Amino acid sequence: MITETTPIAMDIAGLQAFVTIADSGSFSLAAERLHLTQPAVSKRLAALEAELDTRLFDRLGRAVRLTEAGGVLLSRALRILAELDDTRRALRNLSGVVTGPLTLATSHHIGLHRLPPVLRIFSSRYPQVRLDMRFMDSELAGAAVLRGEVDLAVITLPPRLEPPLEVLPLWPDPLIAIASPAHPLAEPIAVTPERLSQYPAILPSEATFTRRIIEEGLARLGVTPLVAFSTNYLETIKMMVAVGLGWSILPRTMRDADLVELNVDGLRLERALGVVRHTGRTLSNAARAILDTLRE
Image (cartoon, rainbow, N blue to C red; front, side):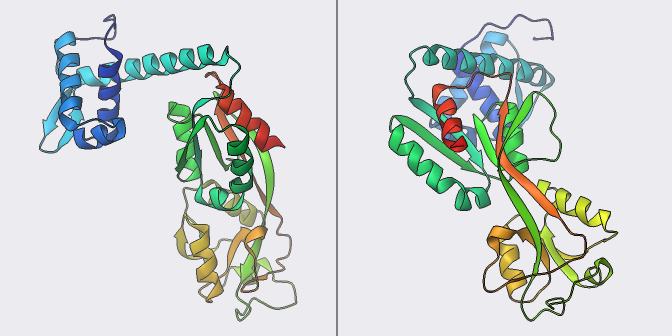
């Protein structure tokens, strides 16, 4: 039986299998992530449980749930694996060669509109780097950096961020109110905040950093938007606005001939796009190189 004071010295492969099962909630998904067969993952976990003389998961049909002992082990296992990864990076960095794996998380919007020229330059300079791109919401990408699942996140930066995470702003991204040319608000005269409140809005989802920035800006004008629909995908919002289903606030770079900018009295909004990194982890040479490329 393990407790908070039990010394931990065990096979790294078994720990990796245990952590992956706990994160995915499934032996089959864990096997897929680890590029192993399910019997191989089960064997590694069984060896770990035998070594610790305790059950780490309760099997509930196809689902698995951590036992009390598994919960105690999980935080320790994550620290052990993070320290091991950090040590490997520090040792590889001694060579000065830019090579090896690099895992980046980014949002779909940034991946489509900002990263292609950067990645083109980076891949031509450093062909030996194995780049793993993971597309997810900015909020999830920041959490993935905190957990050590990715090296860096290139995302919409949050209005506030706590250590051990730090941000590197890269691109200012002005936000504007938009509508279709046929929308009642699409007039050459200025739109008052009160009038804006009277029409349905289509905004990013509530949990997103962008929605928080928008709501804080509208609140300063005394506007409570009449939200008819929300989604994490800005391209979907753009389409819905273009066909006349409501107004929205989107990056100025997304405006095209199907949209007009609304002249809303007092509305000045901007979000920042950039990199989030974990200050407690050593950056690989590849991560340092992508940061240098992003700054150019």
